[in-house]
Length: 49
Ligand SMILES: Nc1ncnc2c1ncn2[C@@H]1O[C@H](COP(=O)(O)OP(=O)(O)OP(=O)(O)O)[C@@H](O)[C@H]1O
Ligand SMILES: [Mg+2]
Image 1 (cartoon, rainbow, N blue to C red):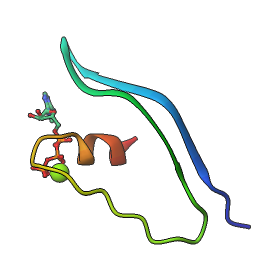
Image 2 (image 1 turned 45 degrees about the vertical axis):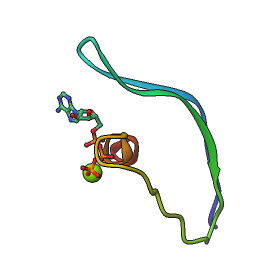
Image 3 (image 1 turned 135 degrees about the vertical axis):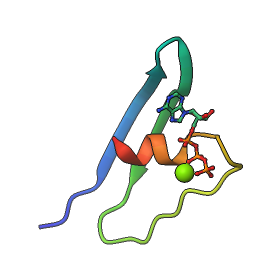
Image 4 (image 1 turned 135 degrees about the horizontal axis):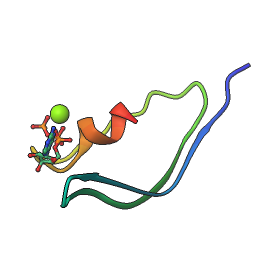
């Protein structure tokens, strides 16, 4: 059974560098979800979690 993914106040650091800051979102089950934003905004860092 598919489940949604809930993200609550996610923060990711590379050493002292704050790459992802206070991100909260819900990814709905069985829905196509895209991350759109400028290079370096943290899309890949977020998705690797
Ligand atoms: N291994 C790492 N060590 C240190 N800083 C990193 C590392 N990986 C990414 N960063 C930095 O974290 C920030 C987010 O990078 P990320 O690769 O998640 O961005 P992105 O949105 O996927 O960019 P792009 O559209 O170019 O793929 C950038 O400022 C990047 O320089
Ligand atoms: Mg990327």
